[in-house]
Length: 207
Image 1 (cartoon, rainbow, N blue to C red):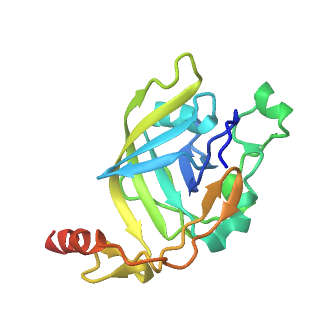
Image 2: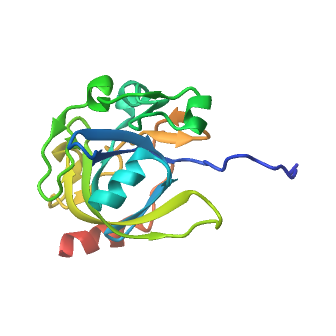
């Protein structure tokens, strides 16, 4: 039986993204988030406009979107309740956040150079997307949330995830880390073949 509720959050389940950006002093920041979706060669990110990551993206107008696999969950969780902002904003301090200047070191992810942007990539992530900021859209005005449109400039993929002519990702090999209602999950087995897969694969092979 259905009922009506007033939920504080609506995180029904999206992949975790580790966003790497550059701070003002040139050091790297790494922040997990899970409000992202992709369309064609673009990505929409939804985050608090007060976050260090958003401030860095606004200033540098670029970042790297690193997608961790499910087996990296413990490293990702080390970043929880940390911020690159000093002093820690009041609302985050109330939630138990602490300042951490070296998030790559804390989490154990390795910084590797990007090709087209200044921010480093997280070497252990099997998907790494170099991106540039296109524009920031208003969202739920008045609100501190920033809805950022990012254009993907370069895609780095673990070869183990590829199939066919190396331009199509095998969904049965890709096991993203999923955040659902603030808890971590992975993907289960494939439930049913999709009739949509064949034409999409054919389209990719034609490129």
